View 1: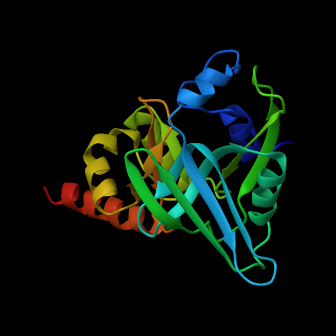
View 2: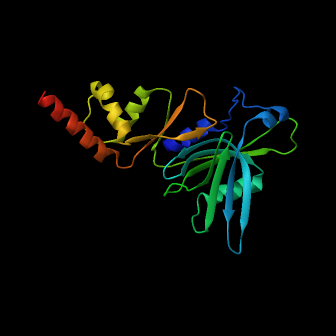
View 3: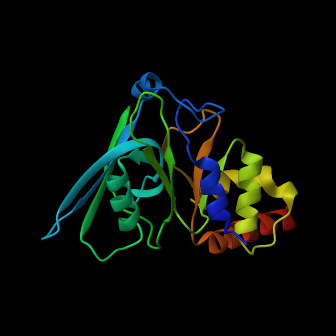
Length: 219
């Protein structure tokens, strides 16, 4: 049985700002896309400095952490980056930038990212474009078009007993207490919001729900 993160990744590749139904682009269309960049550097004897095009990205603002990246480049460059995301032995630096907001250095999640790649034929380009995507593996990144879906993901991520009718009452406190945090993002569809569920979400939700229950018991 495939992991859910693998299924999500396959659904996101390729995810470009001007997505077309058949996933086929002309050379001219690719040149006009507002790509950002993903840069990977390694110091030491086997020094590397690789920069590839970034079609989409999701970042946790504080600490500045890369949660999702959709990128394309030469086969050799993409292979180096995909390998680096699965090997933390090298002393490395990651940086991203995209139109309208230059974000600078970022780190990766503490556990290895899920990375998949494919090759895409672009008319007018001689070689195949190597396209890849990486996703934080813990399932804490939520891409959603509405707050109701976000609430369902929060409830599914914690062990706290929660009634669905509490959603409107608790959501402001959930966001204020950083149980979920809005993420910086680029290249996602306009109606999509990106959120990150805190790894201590259960503890935070326990306190929020307890306060809510006490308040209604004495009112």
